Image (cartoon, rainbow, N blue to C red; front, side, top):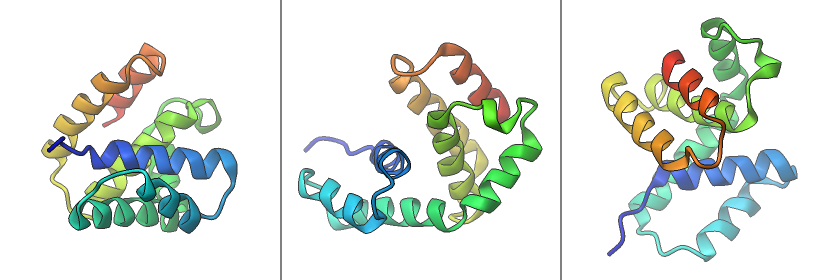
Length: 126
């Protein structure tokens, strides 16, 4: 069985919600129709997506406080990645070290899709 990257699925769902403005339930359910996830992975994705959406104002506040780059200049994909990471550290109680390692692995997997300066910024801020 193929290893499922729940953070990547969460990222894709949050990006689709942000770009399309669709209702989150519909995007999540449509996304799960095409994927063969076990119930635990599906629940984790739901928890991350709903948690990021419910706490977006607070997560953005934290990002503004930490970042030396103006909030409006931060790439939207990077904001989504940071929200996921901060949500997991703050609310889901993922240890910071585990987050750093998973963030590095995640950035390496998507580095072809975003600018390298964005990857460096994201890793430095965390």
